[in-house]
Image (tube, rainbow, N blue to C red; front, side):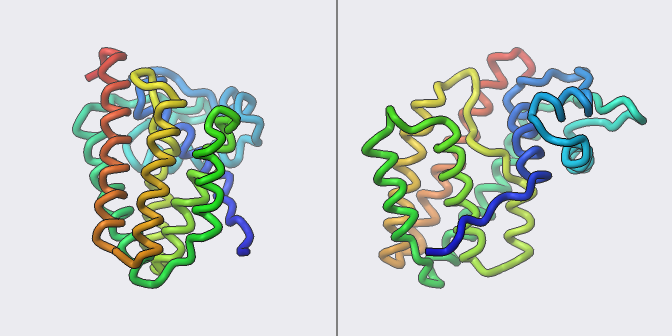
Length: 216
């Protein structure tokens, strides 16, 4: 069994903040404190500062000298563009993974266990398997640039105010199992189709959540 590849702290912090920004948890014009977020997440200021730089490069926040950052306006087109890129690249990654005979038995065993014990699965357990699965697919695609792009786009589980975390986790686990079953059967086209459906549903979750905030 291969050891679990952990997401760098910078990327993990970026994904947490990106999800909050895309779902409308942070509002346009809101100030984000470097020290405050570092304290809230239990990390040092360094990975938060690096996450701020990544988010600023994407146009999500504006950096303020020694004052953290300000949330920039985000619209439906921005969110749609983000998830369209994830759909294209994640779809290509799993297609390549299937073509390269990705080994999925360990991941499937974990997903079957979660599916059979949904009520006992914690939110953190779901986050961990979700991250492990996607990163394993990116790695199996065997293209470092593709891996790096997907790591930069990662925003974690796409839940929001418009849908329950439990419902999203159950649906996502079923989709994860289905896509890996197609990878196991070396059916790259169907694996891609399920991944695209998976990311599109995530986009719809975030758009619905954002609409509820009145921002769109």
